[in-house]
Length: 276
Image 1 (cartoon, rainbow, N blue to C red):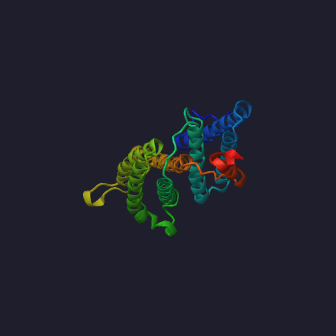
Image 2 (cartoon, rainbow, N blue to C red):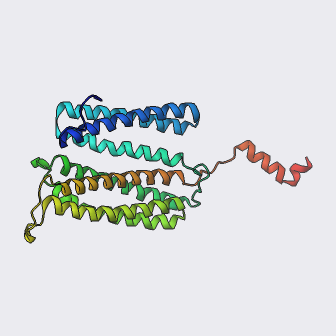
């Protein structure tokens, strides 16, 4: 694969082979990550997530190979959607290895924690549906069975925006700095993705009423559509990290004392117990 004349190839071959080379590099770095963690970090959670990253990268490589061998757009859809899960797992590792994570502030209210977790989970589910529908448009736009996605995908963005704003409200009520940062990131991504989505529609479908005709496979169309996919994947990743943070900053469960401990506490606090 390294002997292929990559730099002298045509545009399609240049992009496809460059994608394979970058995938090989990601696989190598994920392997080095596992080795490094096993040597220098004994925390079980870090080892578990690092191992999950290596396994998911391996699976992603197998999906990419299957997509090339089968040459089916449905396999390209699965390959693309699974990449968002791999990216999210990598982001979670960055979060739990960041400075100050072990000393993170936890929420004091169990009710606020439960509300934030529920809304964050709904937001992740809504973004998952929107991301999959975007994959339908990107890989299966010519398939008649998925023509509905062209109409549903733009309007479903309203559900994403509404759910994002709802999470902003519960994040502010929670009093957690971590959740507030997640909410701010989600708002910024929602605004950016909405603007890029409008530009994607303009360059991909044009506006016939205004005399604007879309030029297929033009450089602006490729750049805008790819940027729309990248920002959508980043939003999905941020939402997955938000759900993880909601659980990580939840109040610690109350540990009830055993019967023996309660008896000892009564003996210590009771004058009779002291006299005995």
